[in-house]
Image (tube, rainbow, N blue to C red; front, side, top):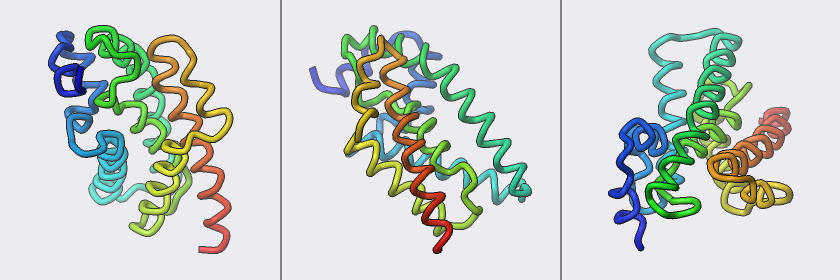
Length: 165
């Protein structure tokens, strides 16, 4: 069954909206990249609209991360079950959580946004140890937490890069 046919089977509206990050996961090609780009755009829109301090941006990202994980695990579980696919590509709330983790502590400018995006996508796609092993967690936990780990890798490398950039 292709991914489009899978997401048409998701009947629980709240789960579909959260799991796809309000439709970003329906983007083609590469729904995970669309989810990550959506997360960076939310970060950018918040920064441009509110002009938060560095600590204000950090708090907003922290709240977003907590919400994306707390709501994302059950939404991913429901969406995957209803679609009949273990880890459907259209579920991108995990990319949102991981991308926001990668953005933690980054200065608010386009250069650092792009660095966080590239690093997160690199670690999400390559899945270095133990990222790949986290996919084995049950249901939505495995869907979400491998991307949380990829976000932590991106955060670590991004933090080191900030020392020179």
